[in-house]
Image 1 (tube, helix red, strand yellow):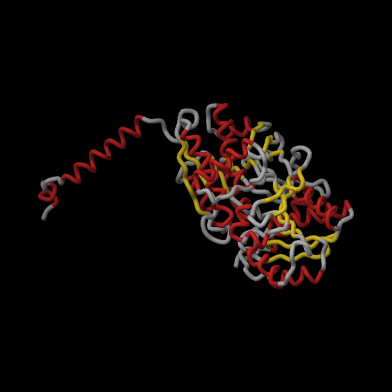
Image 2 (cartoon, helix red, strand yellow):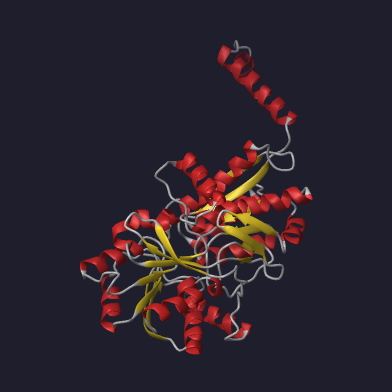
Length: 421
C-alpha cells in the first residue's frame, strides 16, 4: 500500500479521542502558569537508601503542602526526583541532568559528604542552589550550597565534651572510610588535645561493608571509656549486631553516634540501640506544638508507624526556608534567593534557626539523646542556645584543612571515599 492510499484510511474513534485529549491538555497547560521545577536528589537504592528515602519524602511533603496552599509566587511546584544510587559519581551525573535536561530551579539533596563534594562543582558552574540537609565535617563553604545540617562545633564537639564528662576521656573512633568520618576525626583529635581527652584508637570500614567483627574486636581490645561512631549506612546494622553477639551492652561500653537517628533505628533494630546515645539538633521527642504538627503531618502522609529525625526535619524545613525566601522576593532566580536568604530567621519544627550571612550555614541547637527500647530518644542534654556554625575550626589554618582534604582525596584516587563494597 502506498503512502497516499494509506493516508486515506478512516480515522478510528481512539485516534480522535487521543487528538482531542492532547489538544485539551495543551489548552490547559497554556492557560495555567508555568510550574517551578524542584529537584529532589537522594539515594533510593544502595547502601544509603535506608537513610535517604525518608529525607526525600520529607522534602516532597513540604512541596505538596505548598501546592495545597496555592503554590509559590502564583505558580505550582513540580517535583523532579533523581536517584543518586549511593554513588557519588551518579549524584554528580544526576545533578547535571536535573539542571540541563529538567530545568530545575533548585536542588534539595545529598547525604554523604562524598556525594555533596561531587555535586558541588556542578551546582557552582550552573549557579543553582543546593540545600544540603545532613550534618557534616565542615571544612567547606560555597555560594551555591545552603547547609541546613550541623558542623562539628554544633554537634560532634559539644556531644563529645558531654561524653567525656559523663564516661571518661579515653575515646575510640569508628567510621566509614570516606571524607566525613576521616575529616571529622581530625577535627575531634585537635579538640581533644586542647581539652585533655584522648583518641586511643581508630578503625574505618568502606561504605556498604557488612563485615564489622574485626572493627568491634579492635575496639573492645582497646577498652575505651566511650566510642564515637561515625559509620554511615547499613554497616551500622552489622556493627551493632556484632556488639550484641559479644555481650558489649550500652552499660558496659556506651556508643555515641552521629549518623544514626530514629529512622536508622527502624532498620538497625531498636533493641540493638537501646541505651546508646546520639547527638543531633532535632529529635522526634522534642516537646513543642510546632514539632507535634510536623510529626502528625509526616505520619498522615506516609503512615502512622513512621518516625521523624534530624535529616528528615532538615529536608523538610530546607524546602520551607527556600519557599519563604522566594515568596518574599517574588523570584526563584539564584542570585536574588542567595542574597535574601543570608541572615534569614526561620521557625523550624525543632525550633528557631538562622542562616549565617557569612557562610550560608545555619545556627542550630545541639541535643544529646539516649535510645529507648521503642527506637525513640530520651533527650538528656540541650545546649543553652543555638550555636553559631564554624565550618573551619580555629585549631588549624584554612590552608592546612584544605591540605588534609587534598591528601584524603589523593589517597582515594581522586574521589571522596574508599571503594564501596
